[in-house]
Length: 119
Image 1 (cartoon, rainbow, N blue to C red):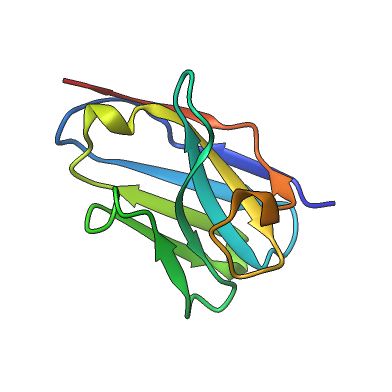
Image 2: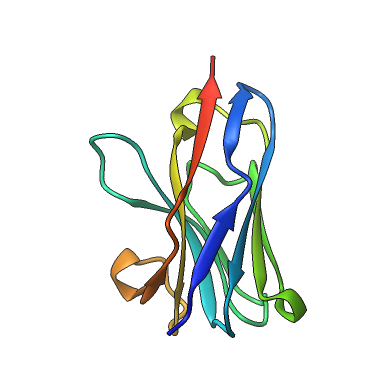
């Protein structure tokens, strides 16, 4: 069983930046970030494979968000720049054993961290 803990959420003005971190209790293969806004389904944001050779991004965040990982620290980070009000959501870290962007393929989840972008 892998436990995931997110950190780094908060309130920021539009155009600002935040950096989210996800720390795992053990080794994970693919680690991804998803987000869920009120009344909406949880949607894919970005993911990265163990080797960092593969990364995937939702079209809505390409060019603004960057995912990276430090395997020595079991940590995956999401650098979010040029934030928009529509990025407001609870951001969840997920981990799974496939290289995938599908939410259902992720086996482990953190509790989430709130990101609020004011206009």
